[in-house]
Length: 161
Image 1 (spheres, rainbow, N blue to C red):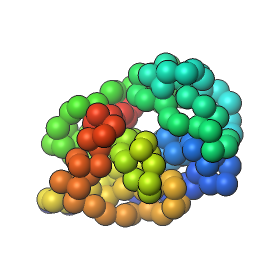
Image 2 (cartoon, rainbow, N blue to C red; image 1 turned 60 degrees about the vertical axis):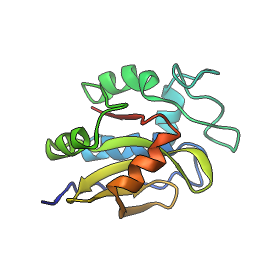
Image 3 (cartoon, rainbow, N blue to C red; image 1 turned 120 degrees about the vertical axis):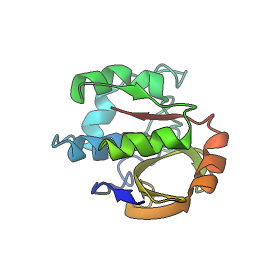
């Protein structure tokens, strides 16, 4: 069985060299019919030296790191109406959420970065389809097993609305 949501890709660069999760959220918003620029989102989110409570560093330059799901709750509730932390959930839960029409932001180790976020947009029996804000490309594919391996270093963090 295969399933795919049509989510337009957005590139994080050059505006947000370290704002991959912000670009993923912009894709989610656009998918839901809401337009927000990368800069507007970056200026509205909280900042902190703890990525569990806000963006650590500056996404507008190379000093940024990331912002984990708990810190996104208020933003999602305000702009998307709900928030679901899918961290440490099994792959089957990801498939269920995608089938409900909800793309998923997941944190992975990728492109030489210890923390990178991609947007899952679909799946087949053994693969996931994703948009990568680092490359700005949509409909990339990787095996479910490889996704799980890439998520391990980021403690299997994931979220949707």
